[in-house]
Image 1: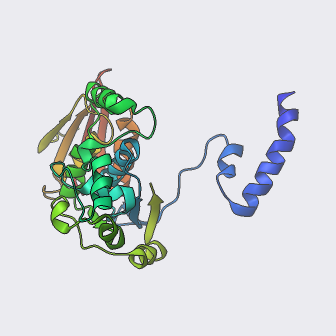
Image 2: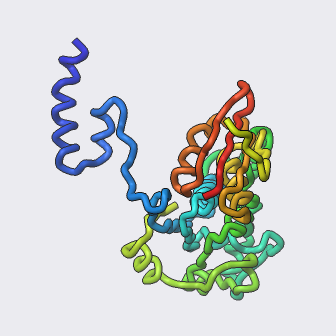
Length: 202
Length: 78
């Protein structure tokens, strides 16, 4: 009975899998085979990792920091291109108002910059959400985004700010945390993506 | 089996992903090749993650045991 109902689906799925070899391949096989990566000196040869940190939301910043620190720990050269709302994450926690004109100042006034002042994209409840999230994290031994950022920096993750957004938000290098890389632009990102980096847009 | 001399112990008990891996990587980095590090962790995910980390970095996972609550890994630096 079950096999009969599944048979047409399997045929379609394996046909698709045969065409693009995509994730549908995993659905049809009970136990997906481990990825065969080229190995050199007993070490898997890896591409670089490029994370584009676009969001300033707490949960996404957390994901960025977890992946960046783990990637560096695994010996992968890791870069994080920081742009738009992501830039506010890398402003010093102690800075309250940033920017030169009233619009830039208002932007920072309405959205406190700094990695310790992130809001959740949902269930923020005027800061109640992040506070509870922080308590849960502590209870379950989950490192905070700030701790993960420090670990990532210690392991050599490069954080590259977007020059264009820095200008638009009126952010100066002295507003940013220590150890940020040289600002760059879209061409740098596309160049890395198309050369030897796996890109992740968060 | 000859007794393995542990160079350093990483205590990641009570820490969640990815800290056991991050702490191990940081501990292993300055050590000479052949040094042996033991990792103590309570994160269930570390069973798979430590193996994946060793595979990616080329370090050798010599031993992996558990007393139920604590996972014990012995890693030899590449």
